[in-house]
Length: 159
Image (cartoon, rainbow, N blue to C red; front, side, top):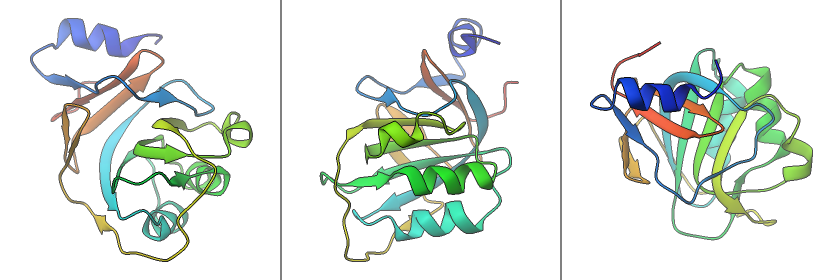
């Protein structure tokens, strides 16, 4: 099912939103779909670690919004947690690291870019809240589809 986001945009243009430019793909697989789980972080990724490590992600894609700061919130360990717990993908409105190590982990990962440092002091995040970035509103329960062409969101499952 190559390039299915383009096909969905053509066939369901009134039902999908397209994540705007500036996001790059870093994961080890090129295609995913799933129900959205949202999390808002304040630079530190402790709450995202707990989510990916401790919660079954079958059929889920995590959408992460990060306070405006140049710190990585996803790296090799979190990608391994995501893979072990069956998450289909992670979309980060922020930065990631360990790109060499994560390129073969079969989880879709889109982010704004890379940064080698992480934020050490623990701060609290917010789970399952509406997020808005890249021209898209993300709500828990919406569906996200991603491939090498980009990321789209629909309020209802298309496929």
